[in-house]
Structures are given as C-alpha cells and as structure tokens.
Length: 267
Image 1 (tube, rainbow, N blue to C red):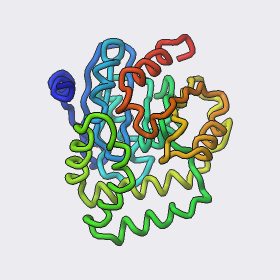
Image 2 (cartoon, rainbow, N blue to C red):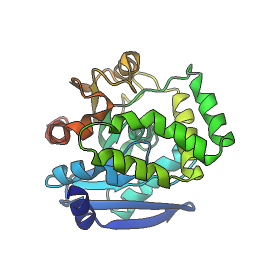
Image 3 (cartoon, rainbow, N blue to C red):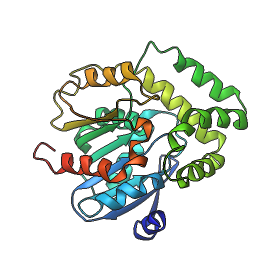
Image 4 (cartoon, rainbow, N blue to C red):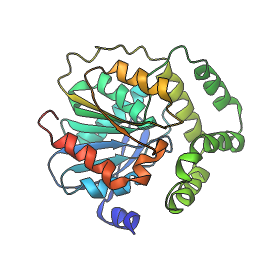
C-alpha cells in the first residue's frame, strides 16, 4: 500500500521551536526542496501519494501541524524545519487550509519561498462574519461537539473514490485533541482577517500557481474569484468535476500539474 511505502521511505524527524513540538517526514531526491502543507487535519501523511509521485524529482518535506495559535508562530516553526534540513528556500505547496498557511508564510518569510502553489484554497475575507464566530465557538464548545462540527464541514471531500480515504479521515479526526481543534479555528479566524492586497508580493521574485475546481463547494465561485484577484499574475489550472477532492480522485494528474509547474523555467 502506498501509505505504508511512504512511511517506510520518508522517515520521521522531530524538533522543538519556541516550545512547540514539530514532527515531519522527509524524503525524495536531495535537490529541489518542496515544503508540502496539507489541509486542516494537519497531518503530513495525507500527502503520501503526491510525495511518492514527486519524490523522484524533488526533495519533499511534509510537516504535521502543532497546536499553535498564531500564523506567525506557524510560519516561524516551518522556517525552523527548513533550517534543520539545511534548506535555504523551497517551493511551497499548500492545499486548502495549508494554502492559507502558505500565503502567510510567503509574506512573513519571502526569502524562503522559491515558488508557491495554492490549491483549492481561499483569500482572506475581513468582512466574513464567520471569523469571530469560529473563534468563539472553538473556545467555548467541548471537544466532542466541536469535533463533530469540524468533521461535518470536511467529511464530504473524503466520501469519494476509494473508501480508504473516509476511514482514514474518520480515524484522524478521532485523534484530534481540543488543542488541535482550537488551533485550527483560531488560525482560520486570523487568516480571514488578514489585510493582503493584490500586488503586495510585487518585490518577491517567485512564481505562483493557483489550482482549483469548477465545482468546489468548499471554495465556491466568489471565493475562487477572490483568490485569482489577489494573485493577478498567477498561473491558473482549473480541474473539472472534482470538487474539493481533486488530489484524492486524480492524484497522478494532480501531481503532474504541480511537477510541470515546478520544472518550468518560471519556477
């Protein structure tokens, strides 16, 4: 099974940064490093198929997310991983929630990012009334009902293709602690209120690829349009009929699009 192969060939490394315990896997070839940021579950193992597919061309780093409570702390911890691996700058791939982390990372540490892939994710939306509500609920609700809300939001993306994914999703959600859940809510709330503007990365020399799907219910049309507006010079690739599950439904095609971008002269 691919997950077992990934775990066997991508050993775990651990470090502590400012009191946070970071755990990540690393593998692939020695050149062309890629920092792969997964979604809101915060488990690097979910990238196993793509890490194996791209590991023949790139050095892949896939972290788990500790329960930090600021985007700055998350970004600084990722830099600590790059430092530990002696990587100056990496291509950064962020999917869904990971795409939000990636957007903050490139702004806080632009010199550590060679190129940016934002997949099935959103731009900040300071007017979004949900931001404050998410924060409050995360602090007030016990773990079980908040875990149920969290699962209800994301579970439809895994009810596709191989039933392995749904079993894996449910097992992972069951292991999330209250601290994990609160962290994701607070970081999402902070991200939604960020004041990013089109052109605020003009001095950053890297290139951007935006991946989306024309029927992604988690990232509907206006959300996808806002992301494109925020990154007017980005290359865009739209998948058709794959919803928020492109990476699960078509892992080879998904990896190929990213490989082509990272191999291109612009990346």
